[in-house]
Length: 392
Image 1 (cartoon, rainbow, N blue to C red):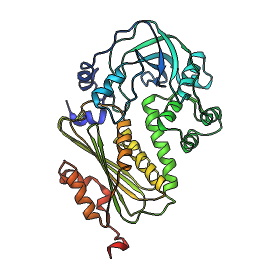
Image 2 (image 1 turned 180 degrees about the horizontal axis):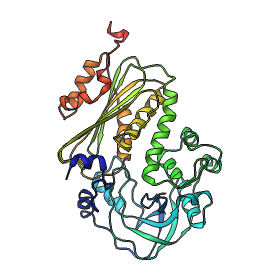
Image 3 (image 1 turned 90 degrees about the vertical axis):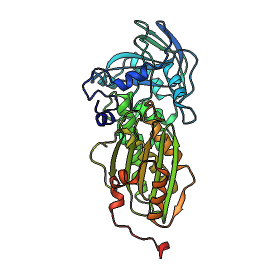
Image 4 (image 1 turned 180 degrees about the vertical axis):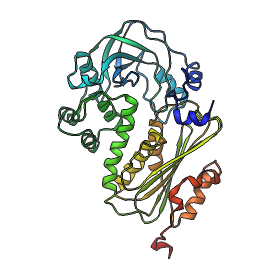
């Protein structure tokens, strides 16, 4: 198995194999519940839209097989997160993506769940009992059994924020504008991605596979924040932030220069996708990034966390982010891990340095991978350094 292909593919089947051997090993470690043809419970709220067969996709709400599980977070370990997610059952019904323009009763119910800010009491029945299998992915959170949906009924009132309802009704605004307005009003990226996925944003309404909507939401919110950051004054020194959880370690350095963003991603040997290790990188300047990142959704999730911090501080900076993934990250949990660990890092108390050399010495001390293996990937370090006034 070519591990460089694994780190690029992350379970998407690019190698041509019918089943990813890495994900199959993980599936075999999970004990899944035995299920009948009917489930009633509180959807987190969560509705899954698949990508296979596009533009005819499978979509449906996710419900717990028993008691509602705790929402995954950085305070849980990987085993606890997998156990919580394995109890969520995914219902699936084939829907043409353009049905979002004029939804039938089934899709309308799914959209009501997506619009809600709180769990929604829902009842579903399946044509056959859901198949006991566990799904892992590099972008999506793990999910448990799945079955073909026969009927569904919302048995409680969805809690739909007024702003969400207004934006969903506005078919004159582009998706990018709608996402910016929702975020500015305090609607979180998870909620935004659900709304986008169920075809409730933009001038031309259509369903968007969940894996695409997650990254698209991170990207659009990031672009919205970037516009405001570019108008702000630069930081006046070097600030180093650090954070780690679930086998993911971030070192994020703000430099007193115009905005740019460099991400170096180090997969250590024996981490989930890289038995032999792998180092990737990507970057952007103040101008718009033209191509999709080679680092997939993790790039946009990390960038979003940094831009949230800069926008909140009213500052601009060049950014070097180094993400090191260790063998402790033994199962893929979804791109939310990248976003939340980076957010936690940006909430840490930074160490302030008056020059780049001192800051880099500290980063190299904290990152386990030898600097000579990854430092050359960061293009920001190859550019001339303008000394700050404090250095004179």
